Image (tube, rainbow, N blue to C red; front, side):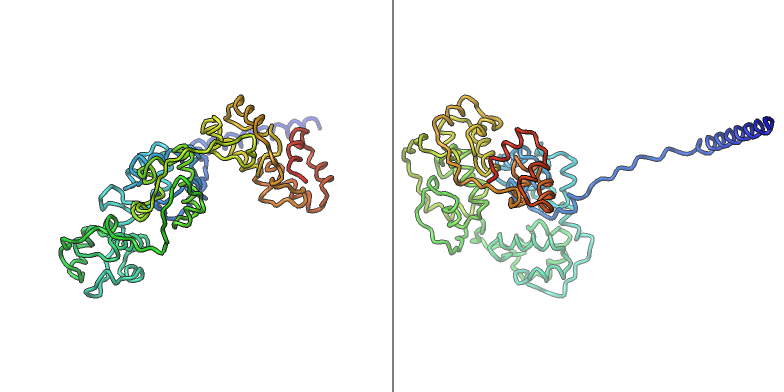
Length: 418
């Protein structure tokens, strides 16, 4: 029996040796399988065509840029005169990496080069044949007519914008040819069909610079230094634009426009809009009333007042930003925990200034809105647990037990629980 056992053992060893040798032989010529990396295209799938000249701070951040990068991009645009004229120019902004630019490039509604016709996105039509049924007046063409001719939706949109820029008419073949969407090849195809004068009239004035803008807004004399967000909205600006103008005045210009040129430099005010408002602007020089900080609520104190107290812009911005995220301060020590502040000066501020907490939103854990829980600095890390526990245990006491938080975390959360 012992002999049979050794025979079986020897057979198994031999078999394993043969299998190992065969595996080694067959794998000798095979290249190692490469690591597969899946690149998320969630950002590109959510992108749509955009004009970088119309984006505000929040919209740049939605494209994936940080707050600091966004500030750099907007400052770079201001340096350029308030407008990007080409993709090439935008690409030079050092806050936009080559990788990020290549991700966004095909969605940018700008020509490739300043003053050129080489935009690969806009001029893909060059490879197609345009369908022209006969002579036509381009002033009478709708978006659908341009699409039927063979232009893409983006090209059509750009052509119509150019016509509006000229005042609602292409004026002449000469002006029609200047539209950067119309390549030289396409213009040569269309030229003989255009029902337009060959030359631009000598008395023609560019709409963008000289045409009187028709408006339904009833203007009156106003001082831009006394205007709040609602006041700017009555002049035809959106809420975002109005907020940008007020922030530009209070933060960039330290509280006041010193001249009409300062107002003109604000990038959300177009040259046309500025010319429309200019006759009504009245900058009055008057002494700013000093704030009585002993009567100024810390939950209502403004950026300008914090600057007046002596804080720098970074400290003032941090305090206002943190207060906004919290929905208001519940005690003065929270202000001292704000990042990027002058601790000594802020200590003096909270000693001088009262705090009223009556307007600060407070909720029970059971009733707190989900958005509030997920966005509040003190609750957002426990928000999902709270939402889960309160489904089967709609009782605040039980939820607190389930959360098992560190005492210091629970203490600051309870400031906002009623």
